Length: 228
Ligand SMILES: [Zn+2]
Image (cartoon, rainbow, N blue to C red; front, side, top):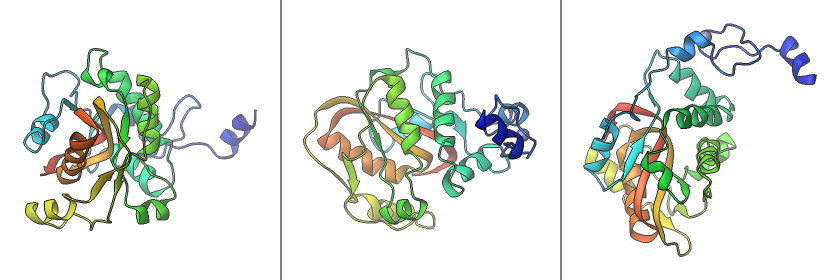
């Protein structure tokens, strides 16, 4: 009832085109949703994200439902999640993601979900880790635990965007550490937009050394010009 009234007083609008959304829809209208740049990574044997990451460290699988492209509806969606406090966008993307992934995908053999740790200062500023609800939805869907205290940043890293390949790797290679003793066969690392392979590679190496024999990766979106 209250929700209905709120809908009348404050109608939800499509994050991309601004049109008022019918009650059954969230974040994007049907037209904008259909324009999300799907990767279709669930269809191939190996995908470009896997091939790119495999150059840096052994992964079992890597998946993202969408490409991150400017001027496409994925951009306002991720922007709302990261900068406008709309953390439930992460759950929505996770729902879409699991609806695409077939039950035969290696992700279904994972035993725990571990998020890429956010910079503590950034998490304080934002008030939440934008990956959390994404990871928690996947964990619930897979029936496995979401473990966000296993992997942590032992020191803060600088932003990697402007750095060379080598500088980037030097910045993150020793930045992560593991708490406690763990012995998994296959774990899932979750991230938001997969842009720098350097951070994932550093997390992956740390987890392969101390936590799990195999690693898969799941992100909300993937930038094709991934920075190694
Ligand atoms: Zn729209």
